[in-house]
Structures are given as structure tokens and as C-alpha cells.
Image 1 (cartoon, rainbow, N blue to C red):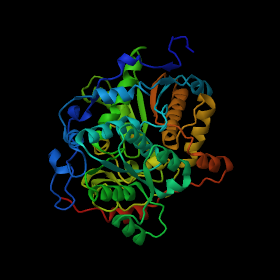
Image 2 (image 1 turned 180 degrees about the vertical axis):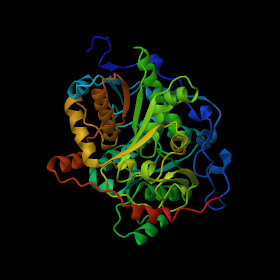
Image 3 (image 1 turned 180 degrees about the horizontal axis):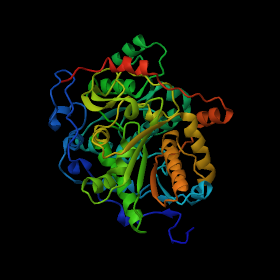
Length: 460
């Protein structure tokens, strides 16, 4: 399908134009994020060796590399990428028609793989480096299950044992995620659990809790550091993850350039920051260098509003307080979100890169939505575009629709790009709740947030 501008409905780069390098946005940032801190001494972590006990060495190097603009993608990772990449950039003609907007809406669709999300981009990279180093097992956490599924796929490809700690609320809402993870050969445990000291402490302090990503991280890290020759891998937040996810934005930028297009507005859902950071990376690079000035919007759930209501402060990345501290927008590592259906966005903090860009004004806006409004947008999108979106992605859909309707009011023909991070076929309990009218919208009170802020570490 093509319109009068001869722009097809679906734009897919030729395979030989798959990016050969990841883009490290830190190399172009005016000010870098503050360094992570040792959880015991609160001293800055400044070299790869400082975090090698948690991550394999090459990933530690990528985590600490603030100066190398482009990092080569190893041949074996590029070979794997070709199974599902380049992913399509889609012009949302049917959604535009429904909204009767002069805006041009594009979405980068990352759900065309079995994991159903963008998470595979970093999963395969992290497992590759671990295998190369001779690591014999991995551990991780997962929220909605996309990351756990993607990592299980990558571990199966490299024959690497894996233990996944899945947030208990999501584990109970999405039982089939467990079976997919197990199909790929990994073990999966609802978190918090009684299999780790951290899990037992959290259960004692919060009986009956549905968990959080911070809880699951604590358990996964403990499992890694107490298992010989094991390492922990994380699907969001970290610098290395945003580096790997830059392939999303690089492909999107190249695909738009084929038709002389460039976004006025770039929108991504924001939980830990991997999708948003990856999609906006090359466009943010243009802004940092003064070449272009796109408007960036981060979208999060009102039930877990780290950017819109959080504090910019040093905090632990996990509930058990065993990980390094990061300077980020946070609700406090002890904050336990409600069992919101957007499980991948239920993290108390935000990527230090995304946080710094937002704090310094380069990421222009953060907004939050209640989940019933998000699902209303999801259903409208599905009926127009024929894709059932994940709840996480639907936050970006809602913002894109709102921006398109603003264009309808003003008559402006803006170009909007958003990230469709994945599909929602494991989220039918949530869709059923919305369609039945039983979905509830929980928003934390100021008092609840202040109680969590009061427990933030005191760092000068």
C-alpha cells in the first residue's frame, strides 16, 4: 500500500543495510550521568573491573565506556539479528484516517519474534559475551515476561543454562509466559521467593506482596554471585542495554531517510528506559550535536511514575540493596508498585542515561497515564492497524494519538514516530478486564511516595 507521497505502509531496510555498529549516545552528551557507587563504600565505580563480579568483562567495558561513539556488532550477533531484523517501520495510515489528523504517524514494530518484543536485541548480545568469556550459567529478572522470554531464547541458541526470577504479579497474570520460558530450557521462579535470602527477607517484610522488578533483581543478583562461574544480566536500565537497543533507532532513522522523512516528535514507553533509549538514541545524537531538534516524550504508567513524580537522586537498583547505586529518577528502591498490567514498566527507577537527558532538558517531556486510558488506546489501535499491542507499548500509542489529535486541532502536519515494543498476546487477562469494565486505576498517593523517598540513601 502506498499513499500519494509514495510512502509504503511497511518500510523494511534491505538486509545488507542492517546496522553494523551500535551507537553510544554518551559520547555526544554534554554532561555524562554520574557514576555508579559501590553499595558498601559509596565510592564511585570508575572502571570495568569494579563491576566484573556481576557482569562479564566485555559488558562491564561497555557499561563504563563514555567516549566510544560507535561500537562494532560482532558477526555472530549480526547473524542472529538476521532472523528478525531489520524490523519494519510502519506508517499508520489507518490510524491516521480514524483520527482524521494531518499528522504522519510511524511506528517501529519490534514484536516480530517469538519473545514478542525488542528485548531480544540486548539478550543475544549479553549471552554472546558471557559465552565468549566461558561463563557457565546466567540469572536474570523479568517483569511482564518479555525479557525473560527473550533471554531464554538467546540462552537456548548458545546452550547456556538460565534462571529467571519473574515478578510474582505478572507471573500469576501471565501463566503461559512460564511455559514459553521453559520451552526454551530455562528455569523460572515467581519473585519474591523463598529460594534466596533476599527473597525471604522481602516476604517477611511485605507478606503477600506481588513483587516488583527491584525484588526480582535482588534475587537474581544473589543467585549469580553465589553460583560458581555465573553472571547476572539485566534487560533494561543499564548503559550497555541502551547501547544494544540503539539498533532500533538506527534502523528507524535509515528507513525514514529512504523517503526523506524525519520525526518532529519521538515517543517511547518508559519503564527502565531500554526501548525509549534505543529508539531515540540517534535522533537524540542529532539534537545534542545541534543538527536537528526533535521533541522527545517519555510515557509511563501513573501507578509507577518515576520520571513524573520521582526524585533525581542516588538509589539502589534493587529492593534488597545489594546492587550498585545509580543516580536516576526513582520512587525509592523499597517502593512496591500495584500489580499493574504493564508489568515491564513496574520498575522504581529509570536508566541513568534517560534520567540525565531528562534532567538536563534534552528529553523534553515525561507524562503518565492511568491504565484504562492506555487500554482504550490499545483497542483503538488494534482495530485500525491489526496488531494487538503490549500494555507497555500502548502507553506510547496513547501519547502518539494525543499528539496526532493536537495536530488535528492546529492543522499542523507533524511527523510522529513511536516505538511499538511488542505484542500483547500474553496479556489477555488484562484485555479481558478492560473489555469487561472491571479494570481499576491505582495511582499512588503523595504520602505513599514520600514514605518511600524518606528511605532513599543519604549520599552527598
